[in-house]
Amino acid sequence: MIKIGMLGMSEGNAHPYSWSAIINGQYDGVEITRTGYPAVSAYLDANCDTLGIPGARVTHVWCQDRTTAESIARSSAIATVIDQKEDMVGEVDAVILGRDDPESHKVMSEPFINAGVPIFIDKPLAYSRDDLAWFAEQHKADKFIMSCSSMRYANECRVAKQELASLGKVELVTAVGKKDWKKYGIHLLEAIFSVLDDPLPESVQHVGELAREIIHIRLMNGTDITLHLFNHISGTFQLSFFGQQGWKWVDVRNSYSMFRDNLVEFVRSVEEGKPRLDFNKTHRLMSLVIAADESRLQGGKCIKVS
Image 1 (tube, one colour):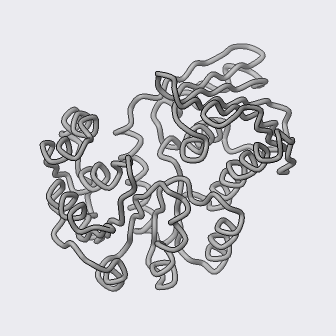
Image 2 (tube, rainbow, N blue to C red):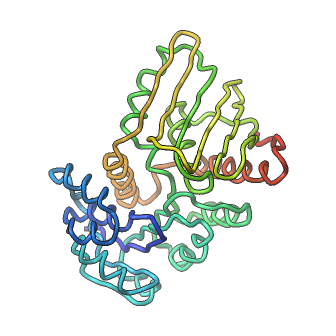
Image 3 (cartoon, helix red, strand yellow):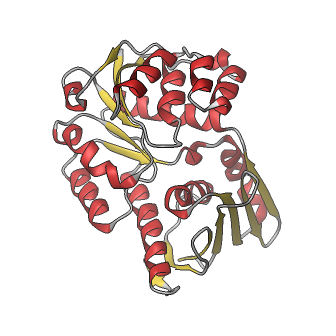
């Protein structure tokens, strides 16, 4: 049995609740709803027959305040709440850093990476070149680091990838989502790049503004990608692939399925002793996220990333 420690949480991000429930196969929907996440309770209810990942269990949880940690523990039957995150070292086989504020990721993951504990870090991995370079150095030193958006494992994207050849040469991809580029741009990038089999980007340019962010990416093969993230719109994550012989629209809605498949991949990676997701793919996408923000700060300058 792989024992997992859950580190969390950041404001508005329910992953420590939902991911612990998905792994442990147990959840208290009343407690999760009480904390402000009725949508999580709803998708756990709808998928209760597939909850639980064989061979793994979240056994420890830590948060900045013990009250939140105790709530997460109650919600998914986690046995041990600890007061110092470092105390997990030696007690668990792997950890999940379930926070989506990238500024905290280096500091919070460092004790575990230094100790050689396999870690999954919630998206986005980093939002500065210095932090990203640090994670790359740790990867080169053979430390186990896995990070991505669960959109990489979305069933809707896998269906699109299966049908991609029928579109002919893809000339244009568009993507639309709610919220901000900093935390949610990686969602759109993981989805698109997984469907396209992780192509190489050539340049990135931010042509929007904060709260109405529009990013253009040109791939080395000539395909254009435009991403639109607006804070004040309604809707789901939607992608459109336009080829010379056809087009495909993708509406990504099944959060539970992508979360579960992502967690299964992490557990399988721990069992195999190394991440099943190539860190270079993560590094490439995070470099795009950071470069797009640099472009915005430089007035929309086109930045070469090839």
